[in-house]
Length: 81
Image (cartoon, rainbow, N blue to C red; front, side):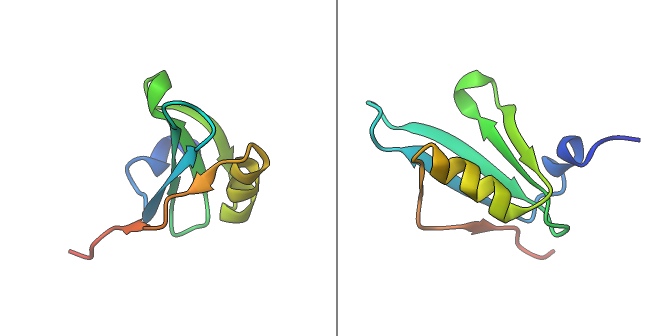
């Protein structure tokens, strides 16, 4: 049985970009969420490795806010087929 984190990249419902505006250039992380509430944060600078996984969006968001990341305003949604 595979973990929710491994399936999330294929079954995501939305994605958000988060940046650390204090870094130069700004450091970017990607949050993916699925319709079950699972969330994973990926680091593009580390070959898209998962740096944090959670069973709730709120927990993932708090992890990012704790490190002073800011969400890029627009959320990208999956379009229904």
